[in-house]
Image (tube, rainbow, N blue to C red; front, side, top):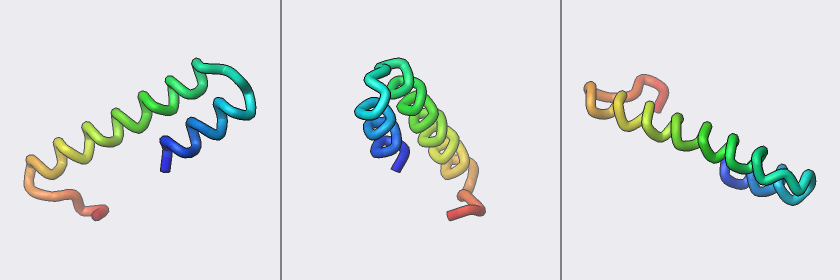
Length: 45
């Protein structure tokens, strides 16, 4: 979902920094979910 948001933001603004920042947020969320799963589950999933 964030990937689509990042791509659409890039298409509208032409600013690659916006795309890269949103991709970084996506990566942080994935890392957080992986850590939560390793600790015994994610209470939001």
